[in-house]
Length: 148
Image 1 (tube, rainbow, N blue to C red):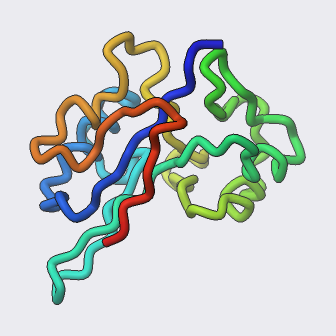
Image 2: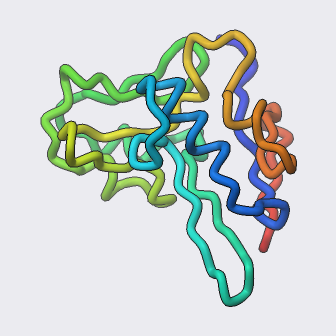
């Protein structure tokens, strides 16, 4: 397995441009649709603060342990991915995720989570296109939780 990578989030830099979410949905689904993104930006406009909710790619993923249908598996990078064909849509993965980083997309009756843009050699598109550097890709052991 290659060195595990994670997305470093510095929400203090975020300006809510939604580039990350739109790029995510375009890469995965072929359309710019915030509801199809594998991340969400929560907003506190009174304080002009943002919280970027995205999979933390846990070393011991609760979402995978919570899945009764074995629809969540580790890929060759050590990242949990959802096998849509195996998923029974029970939602246990989303309930089990301590980071609220698994999203149900009702229109397609399926769950979505970040897979670090599996198959994209250049890495996650959200990281590449974030104009303010709120998202960066780091080695797992370098990840630092940045407080807002």
